[in-house]
Amino acid sequence: MLHRRRPVSFLLLVLTLLPGSLGFADSPDKKAADGDVKAKPLGVAHIEVKGSYPDSTPAPGLFGEISEGLSAAIARLDKAAADENITSVILQIDSPSLGWARMNDFRQAIGRVRAKGKRVHAYLDSGMTMHYLLATACDEIVMPESGMLVMTGLRAEVSFYKNLLDMVNVKAEMLRVGEYKSAAEPYSRTEMSKEFREEMDALLDDLYGLMVETIAEGRKLDKEKVRSIIDDGPFTAGEAKKRGLIDRLAYPDEIEAGLKKSNPGREVKITRKYGKKKLDTDFSGFAGLVKMMNLLMGEEPQARPTKGPKIAVIHATGPIMSGKSSSSLLGEETMGSDTIIKAIESAKKDNNVKAIVLRVNSPGGSALASDLMWRALGQSGKIVIVSMGDVAASGGYYISMGADRIFAEPGTITGSIGVVGGKIALKGLYEKIGITTTVLSRGKNSGALSTTEPFTDSERQAMQRMLNDIYEQFTKKAAAGRKMEHEKLEKLARGRIYSGRRAKELGLVDEIGTLEDAIAYAAKEAGLEGEKYERLQLPKPTSPFESLIGPIDGDAAARARQAAVQDVLRGLSPELADQLRGADVMTLLSKEPRLTVMPFRIVVK
View 1 (cartoon, helix red, strand yellow):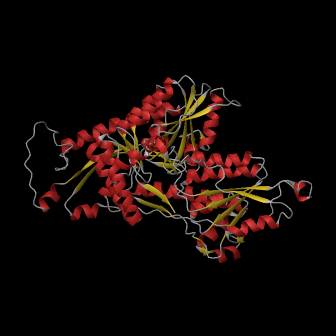
View 2 (tube, one colour; view 1 turned 90 degrees about the vertical axis):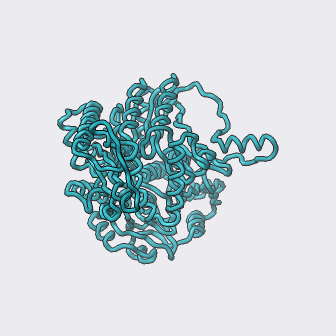
């Protein structure tokens, strides 16, 4: 399930560049070039891509949105595609934090703009892997002479903590079901098992192949040439230009000048922050005070109630835990089963909701919480379509498997159908620092959940038996959901992870597509194709007030405080923060004796 598994510092450090030289002229309106429509301005939409683009809808802040959600950003590109006054787009890519799925969502939206005959210019000061993959969807890639294209390939780094635990006399008692269920390996081993290495090699092959194909297609290059380019990186912008990896060395103002030069006699009208939602931030007077308080509590101005059909889009984001969802100030989210079930119930009771689209971006976590959410979706009485984001594995797959149809992105990390459990026994550490413990017990397995003593043979057998039962439940429900023989499904399970593309080949998902594709399919299945319908975004975003002081719920508040500490560490040292996040599994194991969680966290640079 979804535990925000960070024991592994999975660095997908990639940068992809490619050649290609596309002209600067923007003349989708040929009459204008011939002088027939000289009076009409050349409309240019300037859209900046920066931030993390969470799948869930962010709460409004006092001075505008804290961060722009993925759906809102995609909507701006679609608006530019449909706007008759816009003839081209300048896409300024400013180091956004994108995973494989969100990068693909942007690429598809850029494709829709270009399909309307409008050119898209990508500008990067410097580019890392995902930034460049995004840029290759555009007609032209522009960088300043001082910029860099950092292309180093694909790399996985997995840290193991057994030696550290041995040094402090701490024993990691880890159990699992499925030889590929490697979530506990960093605590019980000093290096990868054969199975862990096998699945990681397969995943890297899939993602590297996807990277090469994306570049080759976007820049019209031979795949072998792309592989050679990757092996030669990174590059300065000047060297990248010489090799044909970018189209132009220029500064932002020179892009605008180029547009004017290529369209003589026409006014070039650039709309900054095109399509970006603006909030009323006039807080003067009593009405302004009320408005400020509403924003702090996450209350947006009341929209006029609609009675038309709706598609409920439920965002299931973050490690899976029992209780309420929480979010830190910098956007670290935890998925609470209570919050998601409440959102499902809200959609169930609304007769205008004709279908539910569950957007999953989670590495798993609590087995119990995952099962409760899976059950609630099955009892909703609605058409349920799943859209998998960057990761929908283990618990993230669990909550998805009962859907009527599952969409995944090509680079989605999914699968990991397996169970892990155990505990961290601290007796040795206590003795090392002078703490002694006296134990009184009744019952043969009374110490099974003790964080002091290791498992006895009887306790280990009892815990393993429980995990085996949970694994059987997981695989049987998955087989039923996928309409697959249990024996066949179980062979695909065993804790193994897959890319979205590979999962489609194996029948673990139904379609390769974006969130927009999933919503369109849900509308079609609900009989709404070609009709107007409202998107009901659920659950309600965490308010700035809750993000600041934490939810009232004790466990959620503790998790929010922990996330806040991690945010500070991330600012000081991202690498150290990633390593320390590995301790999250210890916290989970102390509360949840059985987990469905991925073995690592993926970071793309």
